Structure formats: structure tokens, C-alpha cells
Length: 428
Image (cartoon, rainbow, N blue to C red):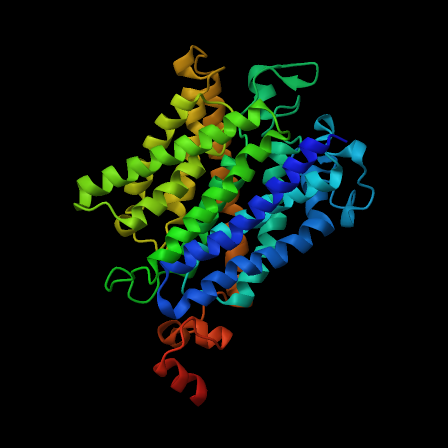
């Protein structure tokens, strides 16, 4: 065991776990006052459901023996039984198996929680928990296995990359790059959010009445916690306390800073104001974009990527009004678009195989293919899962609960104790 690497991965796992409560603040501040608790509960609910499932069969489905290139054997390490240190994902770094498994658990949790922002104000809490368990099993675990566990989106001899560009000694000659989850986490969650937004439909009054964030300091706090936790997300994905982790740390910082600038400049030109909500959203857009590319770019490339991601995501959040889908908290505009920018951007800016560094078109083509595969795979399966839940147990709260306040109707609580809230609570 390498104690330094192990300590870093334990710290990184704690940082990534902190991101989900941070997301609860970020999302909670963005919704209206009558649904803030429900919004935050969706993140905490994701922790509860996904953590248990990960131990039971999630790790095994993600990193167990490959089954058809799509998922791992779900019974191989059921309950983490039979998982020994020589089977650790990071055995080469001297990191024990349980530490590596715990680190990866936090990725599954945050990915599910991200989806909730697309259906704020209108989803049944019980149905959300059911969806979380089914989706992480049928969509996240297979996607993570395909990319990181030896499946068809990785760099093995039976992968798409090997089919396209050949393989040598059991490995693809050119492998796709997804350092910390551009496809697995962000494209996956962003597309799933779009599918659920289409299934549940628009909020009452969408496009007709203002639905402003109720607490912008919460949003800023959430963005700060996400940024802090993201160093575990990206630098921790190096698997060791080394120079790769250092590069990922620096790139995560400067890409995020660049995205703030890109978002605020776009806002200023378009709307005449550079807002705090825009700054917080720029933070997340930059973090999303650099996630797959954290170790593949130079710091200059990371700044460029961040600037582009901030500007494009700022423009993309308005697409829901143009196309008529209600992505409540811009999961599509930030995570799907940001994930695509980062994943495909590697094909241009990657220092070893990127087009701008003389690497030709091959890496770019491969990055586009894995991004499109993730889009189609996640959307189709999520749409099926969401539709089945909607038609069987129901997925949307009643109109009365939505208008009157989902917090009180579903949880029997209100975020802020006012005279009106006390009267309503006492009457109920």
C-alpha cells in the first residue's frame, strides 16, 4: 500500500461526496421558495439510494468481469464480497480496493443528483427515488463500465476504438479520452435530464410568469462547494498524488476561471448585465468542460476550453425557450453542452493527439463517436425508464401541490417560517 496515494484518494472521495450537498445548495437556491426543500431532498435522496445500490451490485456491474462489452457481472463482487487489494482498480498506485471503490461510489451519486435539476418543482419524491435506483442500474453502471471498466467505449481490444484504429497487445492503438467523466457523468446526466423534462412536461406558468431563483447566496455557496469538491473529482482521478494530479488541479482552476469570464462577457453583451447567477453558472460550466480533459490539455488549452464552454453554455441555456422544453435549472444547457464541449474539445486541444497539436483527425473522430454514443444510449434508456414510471406509479405531483408548494404538500415542511406558512401548517 502507498500511504500517500491512499490518503489522497480518501481525501478526494470525501471532496466528491461533498459535491452532492453542494449541488443541493446550488439547485436549492435556484428554485422558488415553495420548493427549495424538495429540491435539496432530491440530492440527499440520491446519496441514500445510490450508495446502497453501489455496494450491493453497482461496483460489480461497473468493474466486474465484462459481459458483452456493456456491463460487468453484477454478482461477481455483490456486497463488495471477494474484493481484495490485488483486484483494486488502482492497484498500480498502491491504493486499496475499498478506497478505490468508495471513490467511484461518489461519482455515481453526483451523476444521479445532477439530473434532478431538470425536473425541479414538479416530480414526486417517491418516484424520483425509484427512478434514481433504476437509472443508476440500467444507465450509469453500464456507461461507466463501457468507458472505464473495460467495455466498448474504452481502450481495450474489443472496443470501438480498436475496431476503428486497430489494437496492439490487447489495447487499442488510439483510445478515447474521458479522464473524469465527460461522457459517464455530464453527457449522461444532461441527456437524462432532457428526457425527463420531456416526459414530465412544463411547469405551470413556464414561459409566462417569472421563475426566479429565490436565494442567490445559496447558489453562490453551492457553486463554491462544487468547485472545491471538484478538485477531488478531477485531480483525484489521477489515482495518485503525482504530477498528473497537479496538472488536473491547475487545469480545473484555470478552465473554470475562463468559463466565468466567457459566461459573464456573453451575458453583458446579450443582456447588459453580468450577474451573480451567471458567475455561478459559469463556474459549473467550466468544471463540466474540463472534467474529461483535465489531464489531456495544457493550462493554456484549459483556459481556451473554459472560455468557449462559458460562452456556449450561456447561450445554450436559452434553447429551452426556443424549443419549448422545460429544463428547470439548465441541466441540458450546462451539463450536456459543457460535457460535449469538453469531450469533443480534446480532439482539438489534446497535447498528445489533438488536431491543433499535429495529431490529425483520428482523436477528434473518436471523441465525437463516444460523445454521440453516450447521447443516444442515455436518452433512449432514460426515456423508457421515465415513461414506465410515469404510466405505472406516476411521476408528477398534482396541480394543487405544484401550485401551492411542493415542500408543504410532499414533505410537510417549509424552508422559511413565516406567519403565512405557520397558519397553513397548523390548518393542515
